[in-house]
Picture 1 (cartoon, rainbow, N blue to C red):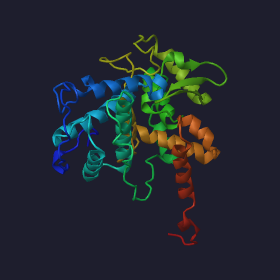
Picture 2 (picture 1 turned 45 degrees about the horizontal axis):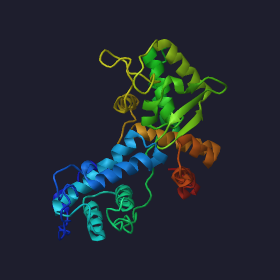
Picture 3 (picture 1 turned 60 degrees about the horizontal axis):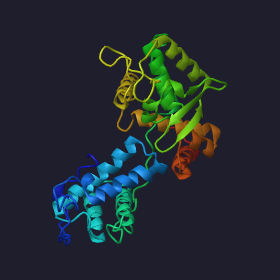
Picture 4 (picture 1 turned 60 degrees about the vertical axis):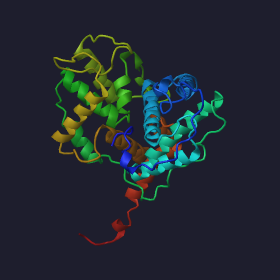
Length: 340
């Protein structure tokens, strides 16, 4: 279910909040303008521009924040609840609606975090005295921890072996693409953003990775660096776009030479997963990042190094992979001396 869609049949109706008198651009519930053109929307826009990621929020981050605000706005409109004066009880009812709609606690936590920032901006601008989302917490996670979808070593070898070993530009590109995801642990968006100018040719070759909130310098494995350099030489000149000269470009008649999009990367990855017989629910391009993280921790036991490789701001996020490796290796069933 899309993040911005909350089915109205499951929503609880509220008593409408008092509408401010004479506020022509209060909120979309009280006046026609879209939320971005209202007073609270403009306050939030300024917050995104000046505060998020120290004033350097990526377009993806901004789109994600606005999509959550629009979902909240649509819910308020369905309840005839003024967006600008919504009380804490409205935010709690929204949380309950999300639970009933089947959203997981992590998704609800993200939505509530955006609402807290939305109303914090309104408080700073003097548009309301309090933050109604401040004390509203997401539901607790009651399920057992799930295994992160990833490939085991043998499966990763099968996936990489599915790429032709030819020295053609398409084959070299795909070998480098899969390795960036499944060995170096890049996010799909980070591969899509990478430019030729982000490569620093030294010993080792270093890639400047443009992450979600910050950049990081990532040393590349020598074999991957060799494949990347061979790919760049084989593909020939590629036109620059607004972001630079793409490191990974599309092939074919329609988009050949243009930056390979995130959708294009997923299409390539899924094709090789199917070819290797590894495509299953949950296993896609992002599962390759989990694969890289799990194997990196398994062989280094260095959580901080894995954290830097992945670009995690919070070490607790990286610790999931340590817990996963420990759970897999400390399986008590393996101690039973019985041959199945």
